[in-house]
Amino acid sequence: MANWADELNSKIDVKLEKSREKDIRFFRIDEFKRNIERVDGFSNSCPFCLKHKIDISEAVETIHEAVEVPGKQRRDFDRLISRLARHMQKEHGFYAPFYFSYLYAFIGISVSLIFGYILYKLFPVYGEVLFLASVMVGIIAAYLSGSIKDSKIRSAKKLM
Image (cartoon, rainbow, N blue to C red; front, top):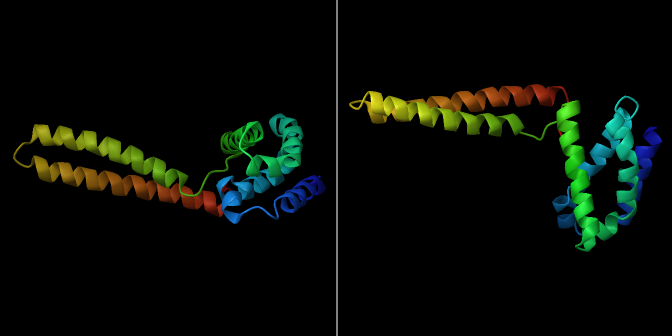
């Protein structure tokens, strides 16, 4: 079965050899190739992956048109990449680099702002100091916990 993924990846390389590097990065072709290999590996045990092998094969046949010409092919290709990425994240545990660092930092900022505001209102004399301290502690703690989770994902080789 690894032959299927290798064949499609080489077909993509041939079809896009004259495309600009900027377009290849913009349309996430490298991510698409990695997801082709993952779909091939998981297709024995995952019905979603097995079903999308057909969609991937069709997308590879028209990939040059999808990258070069705006229109239906491009929309379909973009939707396919997004579906595959969501599935790989939800079902198989693959995440984008720094996913949890950014997510936890956002949550930490939100929670620490609310907590800091409450402290600001409860203790007006030291309100500004407590507000700033809670925001700093919240951001740092959230970012560190997100970084720890990201490093676990990196060590498990589960990066998108």
